[in-house]
Amino acid sequence: MPKTTSETIHEFTAHVKQTNPNEPEFLQAVKEVTEVVFPFIQDKPEYEKSSVLKRLTVPDRVIIFAVPWVDDDGTVHVNKGYRVQFNSALGPYKGGLRFHSSVNLSILKFLSFEQIFKNALTGLPLGGAKGGSDFNPSGKSDAEVMRFCQSFMSELYRHIGHEKDIPAGDIGVGSREIGYLFGQYKRLQNEFNGVITGKGLDWGGSELRPEATGYGLIYFVAEMLQKKEESLDDKRVLISGSGNVAQYAIEKALELGARVLSASDSSGYIICEDGLSSKHLAALMKLKNEKRGRISELADEFDDITYTDNASVWSATIEADIALPCATQNELDEDQAKSLVKNGLKLLAEGANMPCTQEAIHIFRKDKILFGPGKAANAGGVAVSGLEMSQNAYNQSWGKEKVDEQLKKIMKNIHEQCYRQGKDGNHTDYIKGANIAAFKKVAGAMLAQGIV
Ligand code: NDP
Ligand code: 2IT
Image (cartoon, rainbow, N blue to C red):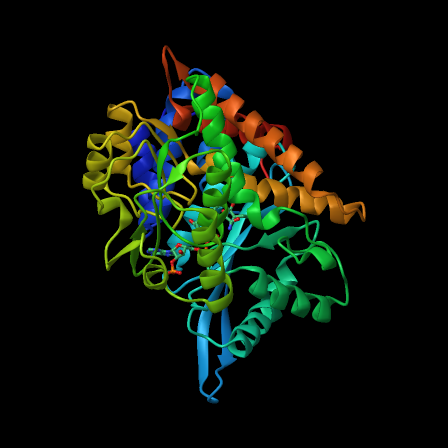
């Protein structure tokens, strides 16, 4: 008989903490999952017998490498490159690459751990991974970014493959970086295949991949509202960030009649009391995607936009029904959560990965704010990445309508899984719902595949 242990959640958490020192973000992500999953598996000895939860917290493989590169003045730099291949129970490793000065092992382990469950919810055959570098593309020339990407891929290419591990974008990795990374992979492998997603439309990319995370987030919010017999029409919405996710969340929210009051970057935030218009959004996209400028410049361009420097949008005291954090992890803290609730918040959905601190989530849960966790609400991006992989595998290119229809269907299905597992009387605990629904799939596959 295999020996079983009856660990308490405290012993389990202490073990994870002890074996992953100095990794606060990773521990935070594990805690969110274990708080829900631990009680769920108490009366299911099959999970305990094969230590599924413990095995799930150890990445299959972590690759760390040097990325030397030369700037335009001839100065030599070196950054750290990473790929965390966390879990492949459901399919090949899949997840984005982040280039930002804050990147470290803790952040990439939290992101890849989250990705396992997010990818499971999509229903597509995808494992979980994440990677990146502490290189910050902001302020660098195109030529410098290209040389960095080429150096990064000169090591990464040995570890990835279209049936092994398929990277994509994340913070600081957009269409420009994906292009340079793919070009170098193709040169080194002499193979043109779907090894990366987020590719350009003319060279293997999918329609709607740039829009997918932001659109998917709004589709998810619309589903949450529909269960309450409400819609986005005329809702006052606060959004943070002004990158890929924020831009297309704004676009879809406007299309569905919401009043989007804000956007931000790491320098400050803008408010438009009457709600941003499509004219404002077009200017924001041009500013961020072409000029690579600061969000403050929008206040110079439009009289009805105000800019606050060096502050978070979550500290603005403004009435809002819905909050959509779309910038980065832990951007929204306890005091800001209290102030949002005081100002009428009814719903929050995470466009970013883990943007709310645990203390902030505690406030939202206590006040029964509808809370869509990132692993469910922002899964639209990786879902369309999965659709891009299918198109690549079959040498097909689907039209916009077909991809949008699939994305809607996937987000509706994710919502349904979370709703079913998380419904508790009149309220739905989407955190519980998402984690249990995802865990069941991943753990089921791990049990079936044995101790590997
Ligand atoms: P982008 O690089 O396109 O945009 C990031 C935005 O967040 C920018 O406005 C940036 O401001 C702001 N930001 C980044 N770091 C900070 C910080 N430390 N403090 C304040 N603001 C910050 O990235 P994405 O839009 O792709 O990603 C945003 C979030 O969404 C991330 O959490 C990402 O993991 C998540 N996500 C992304 C998906 C995708 O498909 N791209 C899919 C699912 C989730 P600045 O320009 O000043 O740095
Ligand atoms: O966090 C995420 O889900 C992403 N950055 C997208 C990953 C992907 O493989 O498309």
